[in-house]
Image 1 (tube, rainbow, N blue to C red):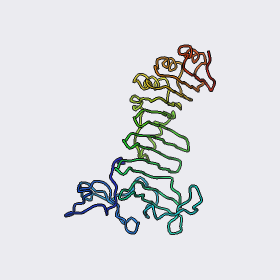
Image 2: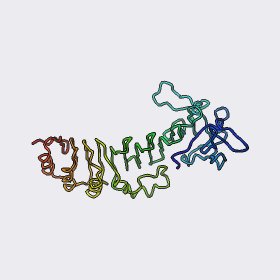
Image 3: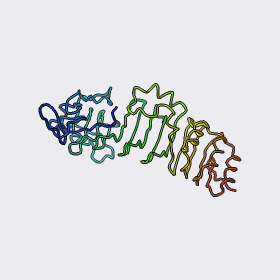
Image 4: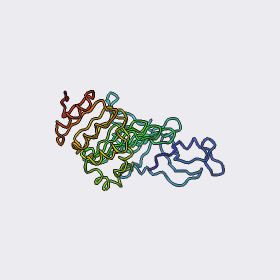
Length: 296
């Protein structure tokens, strides 16, 4: 799936000798031809020429025959916090397009009045969000305006396989990956719209900000050491580690973190005396182990 594609109403384009222009520049992107707020056609353009139909492939397998402007939808119950949405009095099934002026900024998939899948774009054409729900499987990916990933999450059978959260400067704040994620992601690859983090090579480039949460069993001493050796923990002040596979070997590395002020570890694999040694090494650091503060 392309993460940059300018998307506008076709009425915003001008045609000169069969070439379509947007702001006097040959248009590259997607143009939606709307007729009475109903989609008549959607085409992809390259350098001002139509190169093919836009097929809404990210909603493959669902009913996308009816595509309308989001303004045509009305809530079934206006007093409901999250109402079902209706079109012509019936629960809507199809796709609605959200426009800000000439720009299409979102596509929502509805099934019998309810939408839990959508693709969002900034007016620049850069992607803002992918949120797709399928039976037993979901994926979410959000981006900042600068193109940096904000959040990446995949769940299967309602179990979160991976959850990554980043700050706008690219530093990571949440690293939570299940032990079986990289095996399962190979089986799910054809369903993934956001094809990031499909192997563990990305951990070598991780850098934390002030705060970092690390969870789940994928993180063992080997992964922890790789992040440490590449300077990934150098700026962390608050570190929370929960239910990972790290042992005392990784705890000893924590003594070398220059900025650490607050540490919380939940684990059955680490001896409390090792955590106490860590406190003795840095008495000013606030440390909790298995929900109990370590005191000298």
